[in-house]
Length: 141
Image 1: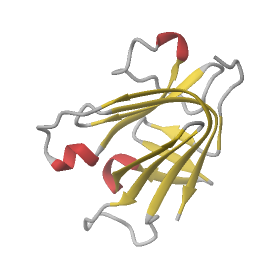
Image 2: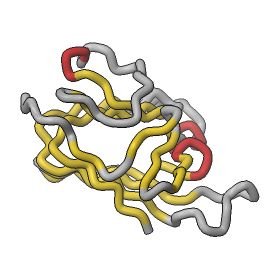
Image 3: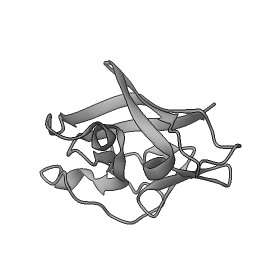
């Protein structure tokens, strides 16, 4: 377990959105989860813009959370019976203490990671992605 604070180029807002370069990015309403790539010490989580008349024209098309120097991964599959919308819909995103790794269904409202925090993605179908890494770079397209 490393004791450094995770570095990010975004902050979390209201546990359903992130802010990068001053822009609010609504992960819950405006983006669908596409999947992940797991390459040992690197982990990439991809979202794409969803369709709907509420989506602004200047919304990003694609988001990639590129996690580097990953030291911990916890992955839980969602409910196979869940509808497709819940399978791709992020419920909440949170930084969460490593000391509480037995809890994978709660959030803490904080914008920036604290020392020894994990990054946790909770989806509407019960899917969980929890990571500890040195750097999370949010790439927007």
